[in-house]
Image (cartoon, rainbow, N blue to C red; front, side, top):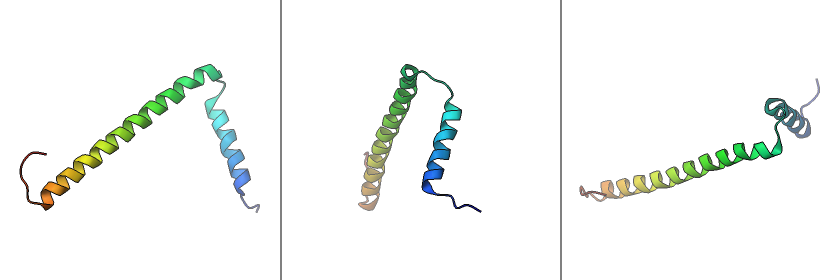
Length: 69
């Protein structure tokens, strides 16, 4: 049995992505990329805000403060 190398795996994954992607014009591909970039930015912003909220809640809980955040 042949051992799977990183080079073979990368080639196989790239060829699989080509099959799934099909023929798409490069100018149309930007629509997919911009959508992914938007979702990534929205997710990053949400995680930042959520971490701030959790930190504030933890601070108020640990210090026994019951007032609003």
